[in-house]
Image (tube, rainbow, N blue to C red; front, top):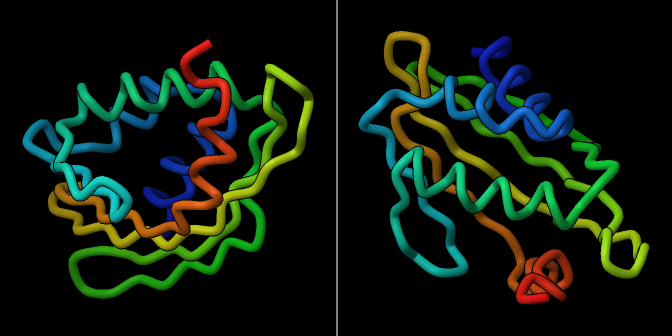
Length: 125
């Protein structure tokens, strides 16, 4: 569980979205509290490609990882720099993952919508 979690979040830091998607089971569902919409791995890939194009120097800080039978939960602060204006941003979050056969089958992510707005600022430009 710990190595899967590390590989998953390290992939985002590196901008390796294909590496992240490889951590998902094909039927995985990804849900965020801010929109309450379930995504497929393909949908999530598009979302993350957009994020890594707008946020550089991504870093998951203050990682607190706990495992449980069938999954893991991680609390962290994602920090980075907005490409558009060079402003440093941060996104505190908690991610709960269910895992089967070494791959994530469900990911539920919880974060503060005010922080999300700062990450998404200039997303339409």
